[in-house]
Amino acid sequence: MNITDIRIRKLLNDGRLRAVVSITIDNALAVHDIKVIEGPERLFVAMPSRKEESGTFRDVVHPIAPEVRQQLETAILSAYQTELAQQTAEAGETGSAESNG
Image (cartoon, rainbow, N blue to C red; front, side, top):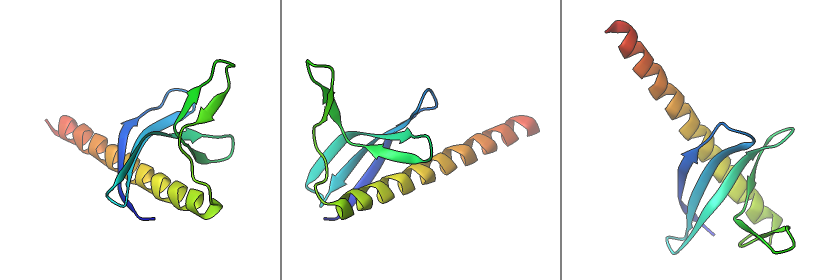
């Protein structure tokens, strides 16, 4: 499996939800609404899910093999950190430009 694209759709700061992500696998399959969540000890990736009538959530799609889950989580969290750093840098540049103006 090759993750050919990762898009950070939305960065958030409210509650534990930090980002909403879409990925493309092998240029053939898109998976949307993957969430980056801040847990008690670290960030983790939650796969797309839906709420059942009983109130429980069930994943719509998820990796079967632990190594695939690790591959997905590593790639998504890396893309998230890169996007976060880029947003921070852009905010700093905007702030510097406003200070100099």
